[in-house]
Image (cartoon, rainbow, N blue to C red):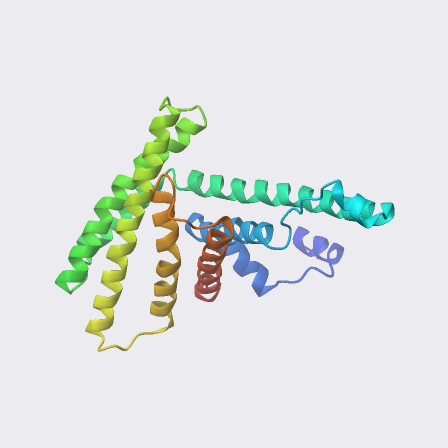
Length: 251
């Protein structure tokens, strides 16, 4: 009898699960993993901005209520919410950091994408031109973001001011990418005589959600988006991407 057959009785309740297999396939792929991290990053930020938003508890509350037990109860709840708020904030920041780290070798992906564009370019000249322009600006984006990220971790030597400028430039490149993507999507819709599928609508919603965030990050003072608004928009993108990824992943 083989060794594997001897081991099987020791795990009688472990059975193959399609959902677990699918999740493993998603998390084993860098591009797919990024979609999960988007949802965690902005989902935790959304929870912070809504459910676990710290409440300011002043000493005047105790004077007004004249109820020490009520004050202590509110104080304990406030402390617990503040602790959860900090943890969720740390989680969101870490997910964002990991996402940038995973993009450090993005130039390899851009190389493969460039090869595909050369070997099998879109038939429509407008879509083809936009795809090539997006490839160029996305290729420029990769080393700029990597330089800023590695410098922020004291690996490269760019000064904090230079890092900030690189981040702004990357965000502005992202804005241009989104605008070109929108033009390309509506061109595709035009070519299909207005008939589009769910994937097209998912892409449109993602871009509509991404655009205000990218514009906000592209300006030193932002464009007035609150943290909760950014969290909502990011969570929308995360939900769409994870749902699309889950149904697309085959076992």
